[in-house]
Length: 585
Image (cartoon, rainbow, N blue to C red; front, side):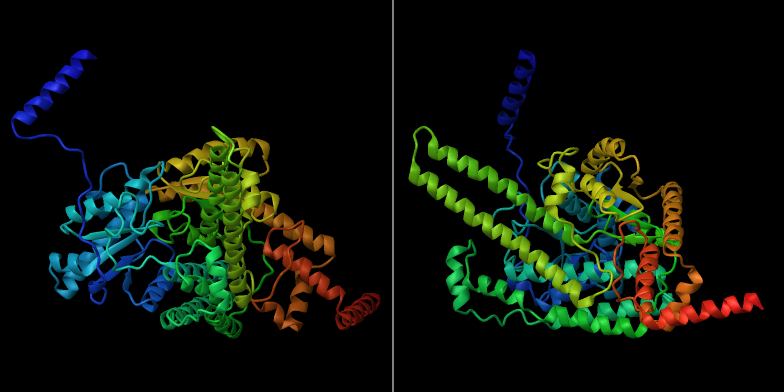
């Protein structure tokens, strides 16, 4: 050990004598994005579902930014990303960086811009944070990939609560993007719209009578929401008396921000857009619910469970092609999880502040201030959770039909804690464990598939804990799939094996529902033919305690309608008499 220290000391002495003194590494300074550039610099982004990306693009336009979404990443993008990034990274990094690089090359070819002009006129904006896994290296890896691809100085802004990513000095990203409440509210509302439209169409697509009409209607709904987001006025906020009175009780710096939150509660723009979508859906789509399709719930690493391209082997469309009803987790669930995790930090700070007021001597005034501050912050955090769920459900009600619900974070915490410490953050935290148990306990899925990039550390930890979950709940049908740039045939084969069990359960539910209600598929079809409203995709089919599949729930629903329909009972009685007379003769 002493020899090693001497060697290091001699090396440093030689470097100093040669004029090469060592310096601690500092992140290279990046050219900031200023407000003066806003009119001619385009923000590139992407990585969510097609619906989310298209709506976010429109929302950024409505906020006054030039923005373009990158194409959904494919295999060519993966290879371009892997060529320009370090080895051993997550495949989301390879796919997304490759998509950006190929998109920049397309711009260079079609618009005749030089590489320097592209670096001046385009910026890539991406989620960024520190953490226990490779996600913390994404921001630096993007810069390295763009430089290696021939775009030195291409700017990357990591979008997080610090407005520029961990390690950035305040204001170092410039004032070109205003990371304020106006931006956050606009993006959250946009994500909610994407969640609800995506979730609705995923739930009805397997039952659509005309798949071409369904896809055309989906495009119309996206266009309606894009127009609403693009044309929304974010500037006209009335700062009234209520905002002025509430402002001193909040941590918000501006009274205008309080007024903006109050305006959000009664904002009609988003609900009106979904109401227009509702009318278009009712006019153009009809469904046949009477089929035994298994419900497959998707969970896993955030990007892999959200993207719809080669990054997860196009797993959603594959499962639909195999006859499944796919339930994709709303992005809003992750937003609510991040909000909920603040409760733990708040409680830790309360204990620390109260301990400081007791030691080394008791200070009642300081203790009282600490407790009062904690209670106010806890109320505000609780209000933010109420507001988030309230706004999400308001949009769900505006569209109607089988739209995805948000799981209660407190329930998820209780379900996950015995198997995965909820204080272990990174990735989805305890959510993968909790969602699997939640889907089983509340009869939400025949199969849960966890999608994750190859070697994803937080998700791999969850897979280890899932072994204990499956030991305690052997009835759960669970499958973990790692995604990469290759290997889709193996993934499809494993999915088909798990799906065969899910299909068998769905068929058994359907047969049991018919037998329990004393009905046949023909009798239900006959009733539906006389009640065409039952082919409306916007109708609500009540859940049933013994059924998961929509087909089985529909059988119970129609059976209840038939039992309470006097005209149908009379008609059914006459039909039975006629059949008896025919048999007698």
